[in-house]
Amino acid sequence: MDITYHPIGVIHTPYLEKAPYQPVESDEGEFYLEILPEYVSGLKDLDSFQYIYVLYHIDRLTREVSMKVEPIWAGEIEVGLFASRSPLRPNPIGLSVVKLLRVDGNRVKTTGLDVFDGTPLLDIKPYIKDLDSKADANYGWVEKTGDLRHLALHILGIPHAY
Image 1: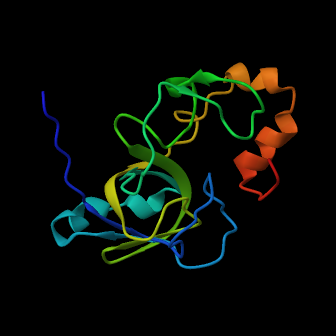
Image 2: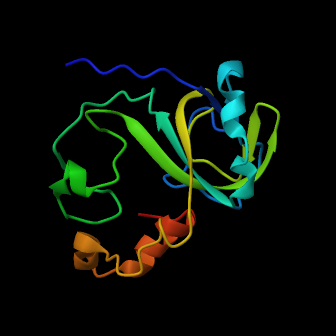
C-alpha cells in the first residue's frame, strides 16, 4: 500500500544547518508557517488557541533508520526506535508543540520551532488543554537514566553538554 501526503505549506525558521532537538519557546528569530493559498480558509479560528501541534516531513535525513537507538543524552541505554524521539524513522514525520502568536493572512506566527527553514508542513492541529495534557503520564525508560534533570534541559530546550 502506498500512502502519499502533500504539503499544506512550508515552515520558516532561522535554522539552515543546525536546529535544536526540541522547540525552544524563547528562541530568537522569525518562526512561521506559510500556508498554501488553497488551505488558508482552514486557518479560521485557529488563533483562538494558545498552542498548536505542527506536523512536518523531516526531509533532510542522511543517516539510516535503525530499530534500536542509543539516545546521546541517555548514556549507555539502548531502546527501541518507537520508544525514542529520534527523527530517524521509517516514516519521517515530525511533531512539535509550539505557542501560536498570531495568524496573519497565510502566515501562522509561532514561537521557536525545532526544524530547518524550508521544511514541508503536513498539518496543523490545535492543542487543547485537558484533552492533550495527561496528568498521569510517566517518564518510561528515561527514569532508568537516573538524571531527570538532564531530561528537563531537553524539555526546556536549554543547550547543554551531553
